[in-house]
Image (cartoon, rainbow, N blue to C red; front, side):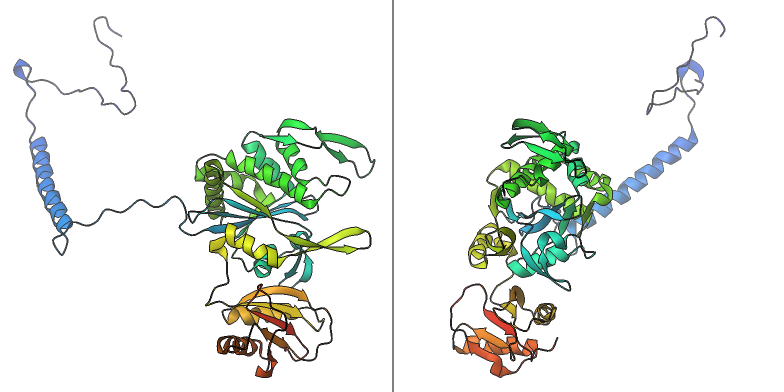
Length: 419
């Protein structure tokens, strides 16, 4: 570079380049005709733009158009999601029906995996077993039928997916009552996974803590409480950014699957996070009754009489039964598999709510019984509608001997019912 010549630095990003135009006499720049034409065009365009804005604001009636309002962050109606965690054998070990929105506190209804459900097209099995089916909506649909509850979708997490969520939030802190150990199925050697006391758990430890079956016939309600603690702590630590939650769910891969869109699942978790942090979250275990085979507890049935008022309190907007949608509880009085599923399809098509009543006390019933609450004209009309939907004769309608508040009509299917 020659002495005395200044060096021109390159412009910073987004800055203006240095001028290279020569100055005229006395330091004045030469006028440019092209610049005058450009400014004239800018002025004309400005006039046109101002006129267009005035016309737009006046509208056809001479009134300004209303500005768009901001969208609400919380859903106007309570939405629900079945959150299910599967263990290594794809068995649905932990289940909850969560509810958010509608101006109501966040809610969790914890559901035992050994609950007997009537899976559409697959017959009776436990809720945990239904998680293994190819139909990803099997658990959701069977619970919806059993509890007369609207369930908007299912988020099913494998053991690795649950661990991944916990690691994503940097671990969780829980109070461990009983130490959790893992036994090698081949050697029988036990390894301590989670010691007792207040612990900071990583993903692997948290999954083991939530899914473990402790010895001495631990009540399933206690295990579900551990599952609730893990999910509550994890969801409360999610970021306040729905997009990041969605990216987290996507990163879990095939170990996490949903019957709704990933975007909707992320939106639900974001809303649930807000509800948990706001306080007042309500957690309940679904009431059940034990069914024992020999000396060990095998399965449980839903105590619908006790569950109904609880669900009406926690998930009121998700109740399916109302005056326009009568609730019909159906029992199989023949013993042929699949009758309940056929009855479900017919009743749902008629705009009614199907409630699974399982098997009747005895099989071999020749005729279907459609049992109504009283002999009022309204009850008789409802019974006739149910009989017509099922394709059984009007003579099937009768007044029930015992009062019940689980459903509007109780049906015991007989041999005359045609699937």
